[in-house]
Image (cartoon, rainbow, N blue to C red; front, side, top):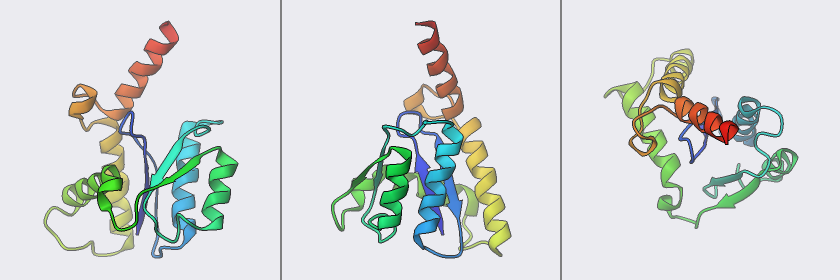
Length: 149
């Protein structure tokens, strides 16, 4: 199972976690990874949108969000379109890593494929909404412009 944290402004995959279970720790680990990637209070004030899975409505997830200063948002029950960004990211990752196969040959192969894809996605994959640059380049340019202003 894979849990992801996607920055909708920069399209950066800021955090992810992969495990052989769907317990709440899967999603809290992904959120904490995003917080580490952003550094300091980097997620304070952010809004985390999800579906209504048990992990996202749990007290443990609410506590981690509160600790990190993250506001929770959930889509309507039974409406996958409410979480279209995450659905699109997952479909793209599966298409580009599995390349027509039904599954990986084991957990270590899956972890390595996701790690390689996430690194490429953030550093080299161009996005039309970002002017054909990668999420990391977009963030670097945005920081440079903000600092210059």
